[in-house]
Image (cartoon, rainbow, N blue to C red; front, top):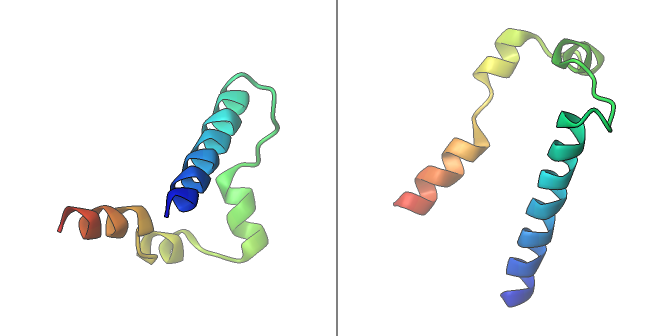
Length: 62
């Protein structure tokens, strides 16, 4: 259980580090429209997809 918490913290740290690098212009990004086109997903399909972060926060709050 402790190992899972450490893994979660390490993952969160990697995400923050990547976000900071993107904001600083140190990493290349791709526009969302380009990614959606490559994955053949329409905006409507994306909007209809469940929001996993919202679903998780509701479960934690319950």
